[in-house]
Length: 560
Image (cartoon, rainbow, N blue to C red; front, side):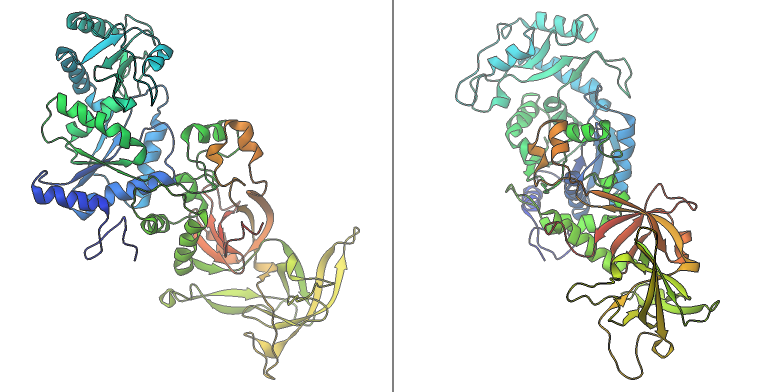
């Protein structure tokens, strides 16, 4: 077991976040533990969010505390109710339940009052400089910033201007409210950051009440405090923002301020998690929406057939650390395989069918063969499959002129049909273009069940489907969307297209499934013999069965 498990139960070792919390509880800094998961509703959650969800909710669960869902809706031009609903669905699907749902907008009045208090303390001022000028005044990592000409504005003048900003008198971008801290601070975040801006935009919850909106760095610590959060767990890019987080809480003299603790975010190769860039993929039709099974979004992985338990196990294996690292996508796929191998129902499906006629098998005869539903779960029992004179096998399972070490059906070799009989090649039929359309074989009636009484052995075992009892299906073979390990390094839609994996989706329209799959429902998961793990798509209907490949039986991406 890894020493840095995220989801912990009694008796398992802790991680550094829990060590900090243990210390705080022992010293009596906090009487309880409360966390929060605070996404911005401007896109769908992705695999990186899954780690944060496991940490936030798992930590609260360990300490019998609370974890709230808080939607950071401080930027109304990019946020939407669709994203709010999707975030809730994803968290529930992963197996977690929040104690309360809050929005940053719930605290807009409180945050606004805090801004007024900063002004009264002489710690905030209205700046009429444009964004580029403010950026230049901040300086660089090696050069101190320059004070704004508006920095020493009288308190009453600042209060009047801020009131007029709030009442909508000024245009977007015309002025901002800045905290007065230290323009010479070695931390650029402390160089008089903007805490409010004019933004005349309709808000999905507050409507047109506000013409000014707080910046994230200001709203975040105040929302944490207002909510009663004790430990604000966030990814490592906010480490340099912690002094600012603490400064707001201290100068406003807020009791029992939350403690911010940072952890390394999850970086997985061959995935794109930038919401801005993912939105480009969606908007330009490169993918079929946010829940496209090739996307690294939680909804995309759910649609593809990734089990929630496998994703949680993936997060557990990675652990919690401060060190930047890139996780191999193959580890995620391995967690998916491990879970599905134990839990997925078995089935035989022929993806690229080739008809086989067993010439000496009685016409009209149908045999029922009993098979285990899942060999790892014998308590599930068995089901029956039909065997008849005409069956389908995979096109690749027959070769008229076989390559070396070919152990499937060919003129020289006898093969076993899974659970049925030994068969031998007899002849074949072709279409006008010379393509083989039907293979004729003979069978040995004494080999039912897959063994020969005389002890002869065969090396090849083929899966098959009875032609008369098959169900047609559209099979979507998904693979990784990108050919480069870090597509986030590439800017612009054109570079996304340049680095797309041309084999990320292959659609097979003529697949043949076992008869019982006519009743398959969206979300049902299967291991198709010799093919991989598959899941019924959300768009599947009884009249049009659509099945997605979740993951192959083994990793073949690097080989390709």
